Image 1: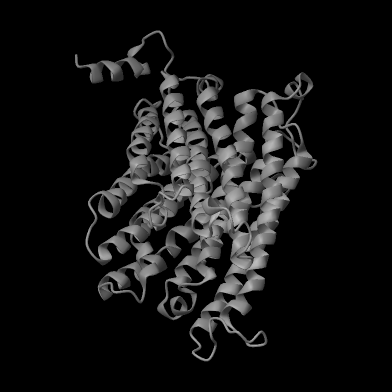
Image 2: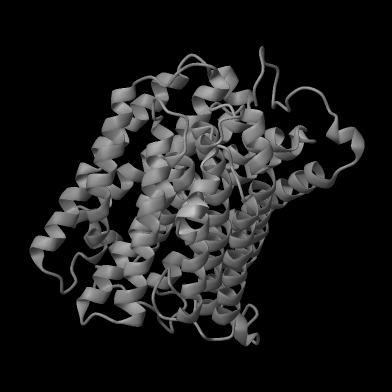
Length: 498
């Protein structure tokens, strides 16, 4: 038998006649404990690092002299370090921790050799550290979402194979029977992400395609990282946690099916609408616009499914930390997706293109939907992995309100300011800048909205530190905290679950 077949036969739990085919969830939690805690710890540390770079970049937008003498903190480097720390550090570690834990629970498959998962996680985070240092020292590329030096890509790809493989193996060796909707989304995302990353790295950096193909590939990758990586993982988390906490099944299996396949069919094309007006074949742009508008289908059916599952449980949704965050995330998914379809229309795009409106829309999807959903997933997962409750409900409330208000101010401020910016850009009578302090200029009209972004950034920073303190307290806190009884809730509620 080849070494590869021998390896797979060893990790197949069905090969053991003495082991029950149905592994208790508590046993799955125990086996996933160390890898999941490692990924979540790294995710939260990267969240703090990414937030620090975000604050620096935001202040530089309206106060260009801020930290002007620090060469490694120019706007271009700080902004790129923020994006990559949040995308590859926070988001991917959160996905690995929450997504693989949900997959393991749903598959009820025994996890063997989890040390390899930890080793792969160490390699992944080491690659992100090297990549961020490369950006700060000037080794960044000019390709958005792929700014880390290309030399880091092989280590990231190798680490991902070792991590993603475990999700696929869990599904392969799952307990036979019904495949739940969360498993579809997680399995699809585990295949889609490496496809996106390898194609983008190859066609843009290693064997560059010619002309506008690079721009097309860049937006295809950047847009689909949200749509075919973060979105499926976020929806999988909502579909798993909402019935769990509320104690009722998802409203419609068939709506779930329609939502999954329409997302897989339409989202792949939608990123092209960001190149409206560019030197791209008209038929290709039209396909991107049609696909963006058709995204209304998965968004509406998913929203109906979530709403009908949660309806009548407003008190539970408000008092449970998990539900408060994931309901916020689910509502944001619906709103952000509608805005995305609207922005794809040519008459709208001619205003929003090249403005802060697009930046606000990106934060709406990546933070208000995805990050808030991951927060909810972590609030549900950690008590079950550590067998102890969150030590402070007040810190959870601080986290929720600072994050909710912070991202709300950012999205509203940047989209309103971006819309005004777009109208001004299309008005030939308004200059970009002027030596006359009384003159109306595009920059002068935009600066107040950029200040609102910094205010929102301060709120988000407070929320993230509250989350970090609560997490660290829970992880290494005194003995009394470890044996706190009952779930940590944000209000009085009958029944259990957090």
